[in-house]
Figure 1 (cartoon, helix red, strand yellow):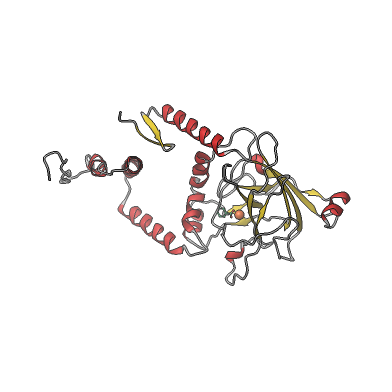
Figure 2 (cartoon, protein in one colour; figure 1 turned 45 degrees about the horizontal axis):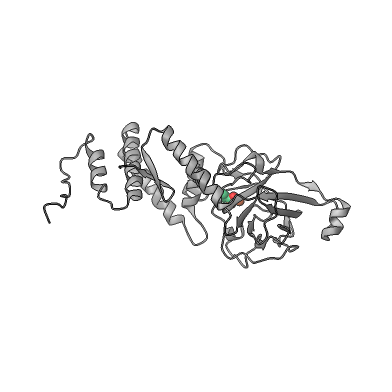
Length: 329
Ligand code: BEZ
Ligand code: FE
């Protein structure tokens, strides 16, 4: 070791009073400013949490066992950690920080753990549900920019449950993907398809997250909804869902995903619409116009929000690659 290389701090005789600064000191060797900052805040909040709650050894053990069970519950088609993030409100918070919406743009909602990457591509007019027990629903959509101009060639992932309130991946014997598809908006920014009317359903309760909800005295229900994910280079990736008005769980969603702007009315299909789309009159139609923000507008808004939030917190920070790190200059 040369005389200019800082010595590794010696970590001896650590106590309640000096464990926090010493943990921060050893982590301060991290060469990445962003990871250093994330760990500095994480350790500080974790240690404060333990001190403020006088965390018992039994509680610490229970938390470790809970997290272990959460990991063990994850499979290729089940993500219990995302579910945990969802019921803690973290998923909604992270999405809101990263994808702020300029005025008039469609708001985001939670992704949830049931999106898959094997949904079949489908042309407009196709049926994305094979469930004969579901109530047929015609879905007519468009994608536009903030000035009302159509956006063609947007890739749109759509997924919903079957009429029993289960996603295909929740069935023990999953055959081909069902109640999910990938579409593309046409030259007029439009796409349309046949689906079934969404139903409310409980998030999985047979794992550690379900047990936690029960201990918290919370119900596990999500109001009836259909998921949409819209992607096109140059446009901010939109993960959202539309919620059917009047659902009993509209205001108490277990994962905090409902925004008033995403609540839609299902209307009866009139004769003209029925014959235009070749479906039965008297059924229901869902009309949804998505408004995308450009990547540039979103990045500018995200930076502005970050700068304001850090200023309000009295922190001396700068943005590097659009993420805050301490400003040491
Ligand atoms: C869903 O809507 O698919 C979902 C979202 C969060 C947790 C569980 C399910
Ligand atoms: Fe869902």
